Amino acid sequence: MEGMMSVVIPAYNEQDNVAALAERVRSALDGAQIPFELIFVDDGSADKTWEKISEEAKKDSRIRGLRFSRNFGKESAIFAGLRAAKGECCTVMDADLQHPPETLVRMYSLWKDKGFHVVEAKKRSRGTEKWTYRLFANMFYGLLKAMSGQDLRNGSDFRLLDRKVVNELNKMPERQTFFRAMSGWLGFETAVVEFDVAERHAGKTKFSPRRLIKYALSSIASFTAVPMQFVTGVGIAFFVFAIVLGLQTLIRKLTGHSAEGFTTVILLLLLIGSILMISLGIIGYYIARIYEEIKARPRYVLADEIGGQEDGHEAVENS
Image (cartoon, rainbow, N blue to C red; front, side, top):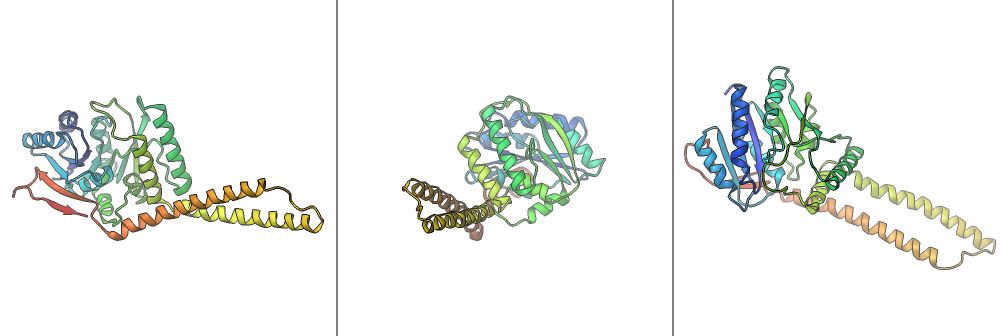
């Protein structure tokens, strides 16, 4: 359908949000006379999320559902939705209603009337986020900008992409993905709209500190090799330091003032040993990423689909 928007929504244990979100999206887009399809991607939920998605799909033919065979993560859910999308533009948003569906109308207008290929929704305010989460987010975005040049501060996965951009994203073969940075890396003409983060409609956030740290490490490793260069930089710095210290020791020896005590030696051994272990850890992490890529396993496995099909539902495997 001409001008149709595909709205992709990853959902993990969001049974209490599915119906409310579907109604808010439907109300906003129908009110603005925007043709759309709504694609929920159930990321291996352990609650009744899939049942709720199925109910909505049966009530409205514009709603479709994909269900993973297990939890593959939000990034995989986003790319599964983009691959299944049929619209001329696609929007990705969260299932907890913290991304206001009414913003979709402004995003669509910038794409349809102004011709922007990417419309990024940035947070004007971060709502009631805990200060610890905010601090961690700022540190992560600061590190990413310093290492890769990508400024994602106050950004989110809430963005609209033209069909051309979606096709290019779907061509990218890597298994370890970072949607937010990858869509920016493509370099298409981008507009920005601001929104205020709303209160979560129901349930709790699925991002624990441990998962946030894991996500940050994965995202940085997916998009920059600067940590590997850091290892080289530290090696060069310590090589220069070793030359200076060696010359000083040699001069003191020749002048009859040999260095005394083992404290300095012990401290240097501990420091160098720690740096070596950290360096090996960074190298090992990148090798592990390479290992995951060369296995070439699919990003996700679909166990079921509902809506938008005529011949029943079959389990499918996608890469």
